[in-house]
Image (cartoon, rainbow, N blue to C red):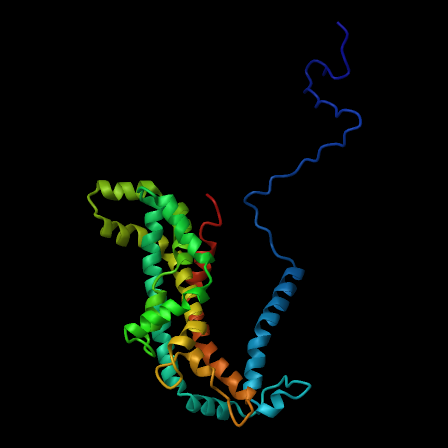
Length: 308
């Protein structure tokens, strides 16, 4: 029997089949799973540039707060710190009672963040792991509320707080924000992947009731996502201006953003250095919160990014 060119001689390993004519040769890729890739110098240069660009607005805010209002609006703008930072801080602090505004804002932001995290975690667990009739339709309705502009609810909400006698009181800002549809959807998506249903069923078989399951099973698993959601809601509540400006007055119990609305006003002029000083005061607490919760936030963002 004649031996074809593709037939290997006896005692030798068979050759790979030849590529058909006209077809480019196939590339063989090496397996790189599990290998660590080290960043090159260009990566570090880009990271440094991105960090400088991100920090420059905060730096210029400090520079502007250390000059006079006339110097801030002159061209070219100052790029080096001046000598009026302490004077501007003292003037801004006393002009609008910044201390009371900071305390009010901390109370409002903390209560809103805590309630949103608590209720969103409970609702997210129910939507993710508890089977009940109409779960999909109810979740769709909750998500659909995110498409409604908040301006549409201003008039009825204002009528409600005036009828309750809550105008110019902090509860008029806290109670409408106790829970958010975004928080419910966020926690539902996280618990859907991070919490095995077998873990909940095992706890029930051990005789644990619902509250114990939530406290000892759901909360420990959801802690990274709760930290991320708490930080996001806290920042949003801290910077909220639209509804607090309607429900509160600068002379009553204002939050920080409401107090800053009247900062730097003079005789037909605005002292921009004082305004930027107030903005600097309102930014420092957020930086401190992020410094304390940064580890949990980064861990929550990266949780679930690597599949086992």
